[in-house]
Image 1 (cartoon, helix red, strand yellow):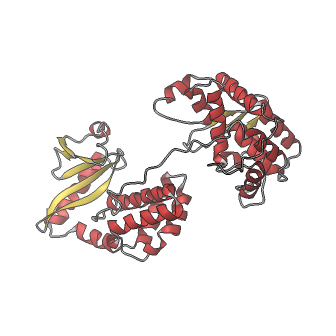
Image 2 (cartoon, rainbow, N blue to C red; image 1 turned 180 degrees about the horizontal axis):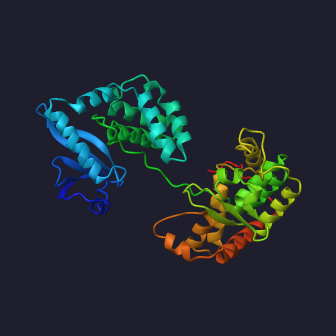
Image 3 (cartoon, rainbow, N blue to C red; image 1 turned 90 degrees about the vertical axis):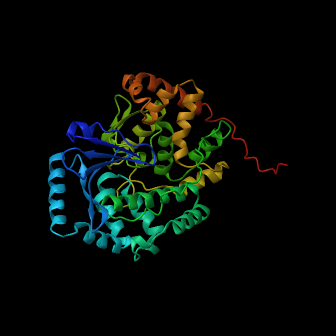
Length: 395
């Protein structure tokens, strides 16, 4: 933790850097005594008034910078100090409300004020909290303590997997962090709990699996699911984007697909190989829907085709392959046919600080060449003898 005394201005506070990981920095205003700006490791900046009330130091939340300007923060601080001088304690009432808030009430506030506003994945927050934390709903948030969060983390890790447990821990920590931002004075019960060590998944279709996969795919009776899996492999897009593919997004002349909204919120232009275009042109001839893969669900397009995927893997004798691994397969075959990481990153719509500048200088031609080269390499296995899956017990 570091502390600084400066004259608060918009420029000075905008220039304040994020704190070190796990810490907060505090900036004290040289003009309005007690006015403080707390800066987190994530770069969040919050105004507080620090004042001794009834013999004990109190921290009164004023608001977020830059939503709350320096001038208004000073006015709020001065007003609060006036109330305190008159014998009132504005923090006492707020603390009583927050301490008595149930976890359900806090989560509802978190969902409406933060998750739905700032996260495209808010529905996952709602689903996972209702699934794993419903037993906390009627409890006061101040009663939830670190040891039981540790036990829950361990149980979910054992029953549902390390990744699920770590994501739940992150949600709990985020919910209680917001409670603190909104004036709660308690201790975040998820603080200091270490996540399980995760291993990056590197599964993709191997050369010996491709003939069996293509043969099983050709035999799949669900035509929409079959074509969906093939486009997922050939375009390398995320499952949610491919399921929601619309005809208006396809440029048949340029052989491209414009994905307007991706996971990182940036639009992406995906190159479509000749094999992908053949599938799309055939589907377009018989389509009356705005969706490339129409379905009977509420959204109008194909839902997650898990049953068809299971049939294909069973027939092909392939284990431990997920639909998302088709996306990784394209990138892996690009690498195998000589593409560098920047080309692969642009193909798959990855974004990072190190490569953003390079992506900006790339045009679609090298990406097109790389995708076509990788696709041709994979399709070299179409019609190749499909080896029987090895079922013999090995020593």
